[in-house]
Length: 174
Image (cartoon, rainbow, N blue to C red; front, side, top):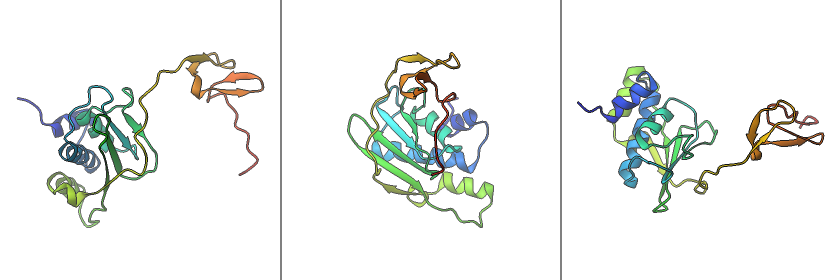
């Protein structure tokens, strides 16, 4: 028997919870409203503004992943997901509405899974452009620790190339 997308998300995440349900519902709404399918490469991009449970459902259902370069973390802390279709140019931002604080954990999950997406999210246009496609950067050797890092993550400090772990930021308090 084939597993549902919800069952696949729960299996990947390790348990069911309201946070996972938010990501599941966002992915399903994006699929419905944008006509997208599972992304085998970078044709669909998701910019997530949080690093919470729902991101696991986004990965399982849409095929967007950090490793593939089509899941991008933009750390605003908001329960918001922006989807972009590279082929059509279409985009959609889903922002979760506040839930009734009187609902308990199980009630929240059931409500999210069963309510219409319009009750769960505000639908908007993203306020930022489609991120460019992922690039492969040349790796450079850190002159301090000897580990490799991509060139765009290296810094020049005291005349030597250093990785971000070895870099000592200079600040005078602001």
